Amino acid sequence: MTFPGTPGLRFLGAIQFLTTIPISRSTVPPHEAAPFFPLIGAAIGALSALPLAFLPLPAPLSAALTLSLQLILTGMLHEDGLADISDGVRKGRAPERMFEIIKDSRIGSYGACALILALLLRWQALSLLPRYPLIIIPTIAAAESLSRCAILWLGFLARPACPGMGAWLSESRSPFTLLSSLLFAAAWALWAGPLPGLSLLLGLFLLALAASLYFHARLGGVVGDCFGALQQITVIYCLLVFLWP
Image (cartoon, rainbow, N blue to C red; front, side, top):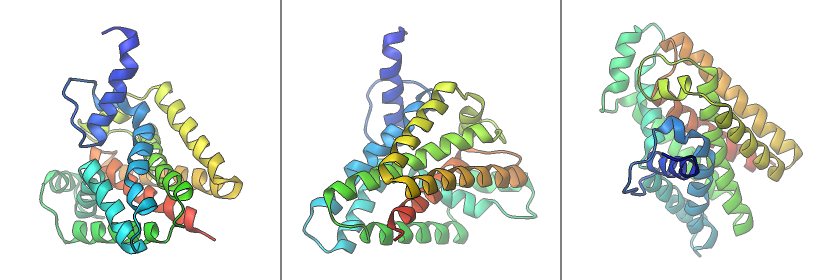
């Protein structure tokens, strides 16, 4: 593989991993595509914002269409992580049992409730955004992009609990990945303005740090589903910050 082709393959790899858009060729593993996660997150947000920005429908209905488009574009990748972590991670439960539940494809009552609450919060937050395309599109793009920055930060803060996706993102950290996430986060913070921008950056870092400490205490590290759970929490946080008076 030649060096000029590497950025393109990493970009395609990020699309292949984070979305349901078909990529017909082989690309790179997710940890090599990680620097492009915030960019793909922004694209997911901007594309999914179109119904809310332009359709002449009531805000709740347009917001539901925007949320549905996000779920279709991502294949509910991160929602699955939130449900699995909610079902599996419990105080007093042995790590081996938690890993067993997390790997189970079935969703239990805790996972279902967490998923419903997360979707309701996102739907309500989206429906309350000012219905101006120049506000809605960058706001949703920023929330989706920043939530992908947060999962990259979790990869730098946490150690892997077992082999798999969590191990790839935690063990294959690179300065380029960190720089990419920091640049995207700083750009969105500048766009949001001084106070919201500072709140976004500080809150995202604290959420990533809290997630790292929590998963180390419960699981001994992170697994792939931990990143999905954090993405769901942080995208809700970003939307709430943008809605704050």
